[in-house]
Image 1 (cartoon, rainbow, N blue to C red):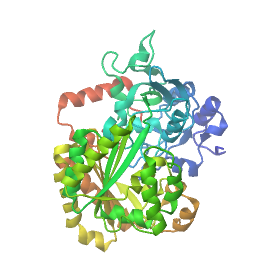
Image 2 (image 1 turned 60 degrees about the vertical axis):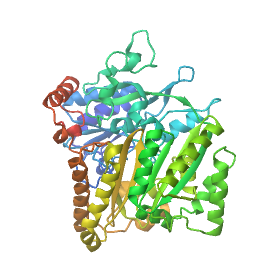
Image 3 (image 1 turned 180 degrees about the vertical axis):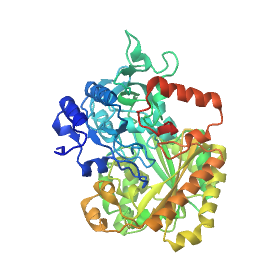
Image 4 (image 1 turned 45 degrees about the horizontal axis):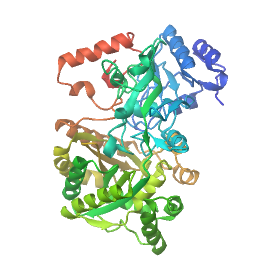
Length: 534
């Protein structure tokens, strides 16, 4: 239940919002406002004056119109998984819109193969509801690993990738249209649903106006309802993993596989990531229960038995692996899936890879939306903070070696402060991602603690703040961001961290961006600072 302060300094806006959504869905006590105003970036921002949770598009529209009448900045928040200051207020006196109550499927059309869902629905909830039908369906891209919390609207705003991205690219490619509430409360519809006699089956009804609102980090309006493509759920899923001795061998393998577009997912880990999985028991106290779930699936049988042997014997299958590559193959036909797997195996062997147990991708896919602790924190409760470069395939190997060189150049500094690093590599279609992460011991804070299991929260809640170490870690992260920028890489999840405006080398494009902002948000109140627009 929400808390309303008796001595609120913003009682007028609070009372108006209460009249729209009810007292249970408005919060202005300090603890709640600080909680909702904090993302995973470990960068200070302002604290919102009030948090409101609308229950539908009409309530959202009224809330924004009320904020507009008061001249207040507006910040949308989804599941809270941003680590780029995506929803941290930049200005004081902001109204933060918590979208998580808007979590319903509006329209499921398995004949025309689309689903319209409220933007606050999590990827986990959407996936499970779609798969529970008589004919299981899913969206082509179907979520990040944080999908237990991450929302559809948040992912579309930040343009995330992972599950299904190997073939179907980032989430933006799956969007057919959306309903957006603008800063003044007006409601805008994109795609073929804007046709006065139409339905939301087609994105490019005239110019691609839907694209304006994908990856906008909430700068242009708040997404209330989103229509996504559907595919029939693949009936066969196979898994394979390989180990490599060098980063160059693994990245070269991934670029070849990306061009073939045969892997639903294909992701690689460095030695630190591998050892972290081991330390967190990934082989496999928690994995065995998961693997039982896939015992009856076409693709799960082989993975089940090999993984069972690993867990039963206590073997640490990643212990001696320097770089590990994990692949998933989806199909509607067993022979087609096996052909894709065998093709990928040949590529891995050609690049000096050695096949290893496929437990890790089996578990990831069997429970795609488990808890986020293993990807949110280090194995000993360290802060995990990623940064990434998004690049063409031709740059993957060079940027991988440049990333390793950066960490080697800073090794003495990192050793001094006990700061560690790891990196994830993957592709979305034929675009490549390298995502290094920085780890250091520091105060976790209430938001991070709320996302992990109670036993670990209790264990790590007393880790003290370390501002000196934090300053060094954040500077190292900035250096990686700058390295990728200097080499022509792009970024997803722009938020307020990546220097989007500074990287644009085209004045007419900058002018167009500013004109769009003025047309959609003339007073500049919608998530100020997003896309560098203020």
